[in-house]
Image (cartoon, rainbow over all chains, first blue to last red; front, side):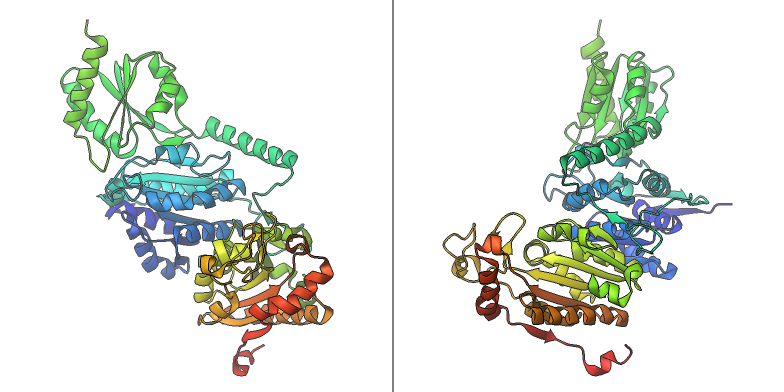
Length: 355
Length: 221
């Protein structure tokens, strides 16, 4: 039987990295995720794995680049300001098609901001962040259990598509303690014959690069990447629906916001408001199709986020104006209460649908 | 590449090409290579070498790449004593972007961004990378050579041979600085550029070994 443990999200993620066979972790301390580096500094050497505190996030992401290019399973983690510093490296990793896992324990910004949780890095995560045309697969955990589970999933998706995967968590999920189980895991076999392991006489040299100086070749590379992103959009959309079968209204929320919305949903349903929740699990690829289908059923959608309104733009893209799409959010590390969300919902229902 | 072939270590060698004139280094070497972002070669090399400690790993970086944007990654890699070889091409100018001032541009030297000559009061003096890095305990072998005549090329080759061999010892970083020229951006003929190295460059960047391993440290080779 799988043992149940009580752990912090950050520590569960670190433990899962070890169980997933992560060969090397490179990181730099930053609140609220320094536990990851601390946990791995203690545990990785026991498994003969590499753990290194780099001189900066810029260095750690490039160490990930080197290790991933040599064919190893590797990851880094940080929080918002550190993830901003990594954007150059992430763009190169995506361009060179290197598999790796990057974890952002999102804190509120902009700038140095605060060490409290936030979801202000949505745009950075799903719309680019670094330069050039690329996408990361973005996984949004809403529990300590998912912070562990998405490490396995993230590494496997990275290997499958030769693409960086971002786990976008937040300071609350990372710091909270919950029950977690580490399920048995078998690592899928992956071909890494492209890795730079030293060139034997029996093959051509391997060269890891994102440089294609001839426009014709660069465009070919862009098209190859776009074809990959299309396959990802077709095959990897993940989401959770709660109470949508009879829903007349819909919350759309991910991560911590989705947890708060679940409570708000219970309160609203007790008041007779038939509301459901769609929780995107992958933020890229985004569940546009499911939201479009639900737009034929519900009267209004409310996107709840810990930012000034970022994901709501994707909800609007999905819904194509068929029903009103509204936004409610708090910033600066402040959390909305479920009651506050329900109050806002009632006002919006009154505004749109009072007959 | 000649050194790698002579030592017959192609199968064990991984190179890292930087951004700058050296960006096409991979075109001249039939070995596995990785292209690094501008200045990040030593971090990339760290990622490779830590996971494959028995391979030979080297970076090939210019003065802008190593001494300006990448000096933090370089200094920390050497301070950790990463068992890598850093080949540092110093021609005192940004070549790829056509002739801007580098951290190693000589005092008074004219470049497109120091049209009246490098003013050390405004920009500081040229950084002597090898002397700076040799102070770090992680540096095992530091030498500065040139390639502007046949004898200099022979000495540079010898330095590279040493540096590759020393990687087997796992005792620290080898830094081989090579003073090169850039006639097109120096606005000189190749002969003038070669003379400029002998008469001007070496005044700021004297050639020779800066830090050499002690004899007893080399016993196992």
